[in-house]
Image: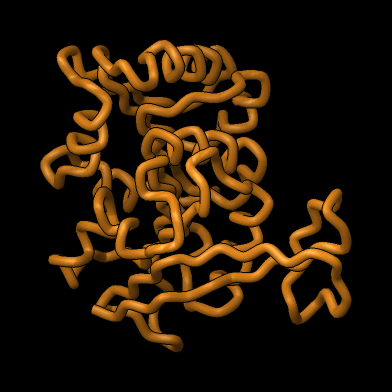
Amino acid sequence: MIKRLLSFALLAVSCASASAQTAQVAKSTTMQLSVDYLLFQPKSYSDKGKPVPLIVFLHGSGESGNDLERVKKWGPPAIVESNPDFPFMVVSPQAPEPNGWNVPLLKGMIDDVLSKYNVDRSRVYLTGLSMGGYGAWELAMRYPEYFAAIAPICGGGNPRNVGKLKNIPTWVFHGAKDTAVPEAASAILVDALKAAGGNVKYTVLPEGGHTDSWVYAYDSKTGLFDWFLQQRKQ
């Protein structure tokens, strides 16, 4: 297992700009944004070997801050701590504040990872929980061309653009008794995606609360990661 603590910098020409240019491209700037992230490389990884699938994981509000150790609490970054045979590269950024994700910055981070590492671009997957579930929906709707499949957990968002995901296999999880993010927040998006002809699975845990939904989703018995591996971008 190889772990690294990395930082991606996004340079923009002004505070109003959403241009995702890296430091190598943007030579002058008035603002610099950056995101720190954990990178896990599977044992099978080689720069010149077979490209590996990639999971981008977005944490919840409780793991925000400037200590990457907090990101290891749940989901794929927790799993790889004890499973060096996990068959994915995993990129787990950290949001500095518990008030949402900077989606253009995440897009720039993914571009940076894809340019540096031997990743199978037909097998890039996205998942997130709570605040990260909201982020996963938004990131996928903004940049659907990147992802082979997504799995938002106890998230939500604006259903207006969810039709952009109709060709992306989607598996959504939510607890029916979630008091932090109502189950209806996922149901609205699932219904809209189904109406648009999307390929969507929806798992509602009848007795599940907020935390229960991602504990269940990321359990190996649930089969989410096996399902990811079955999906390829067309």
